[in-house]
Length: 218
Image (cartoon, rainbow, N blue to C red; front, side, top):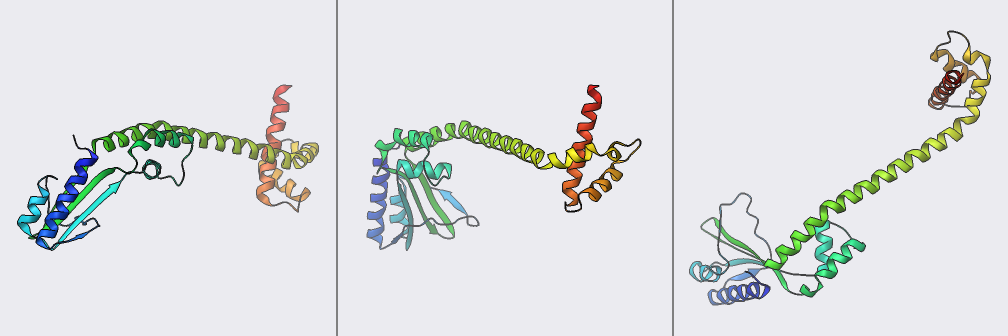
């Protein structure tokens, strides 16, 4: 098992080995996308430093903060009630080392390791288990908002078109025998020249639907 104390010890041993060989430690991660790389055990890394005597060592040690780590995991800028509950479960780990990243270059090969405290793996696993239901809840809430917005638009449109629809239905020409949809639209444009074509087309469609409903009810 790897504990925070183990990460602290490894970091201290690497710093000591670096001091002995005059290497500079950079608190940065070495990019290795196009560089040959080999994994090194964390406990072996200090001995590797002494053997290779590199000029630069890359080391990043992260310190746990429940609130910040929860926000980072869920890519949120603030904690809601659910995330606050998760963070509260892990506040006892605040200030402890959670991950240690080590790296150095030798003969064109990157030697490195990422050591993580076992409890931090547990934290990430618990956070991941929460991600599924949380994402589903967010999706459901968004769907409800969309549905409510669609209903509101429908009500607003019906209210807006009501005077136009009423006047169209009352006009005998609108329900004349064998009248086409195109002629009904031209009639609407004649009666309501101030309205745009898109509005009148929707109003005509509504009027046709209402006439059909009235006719089917007879």
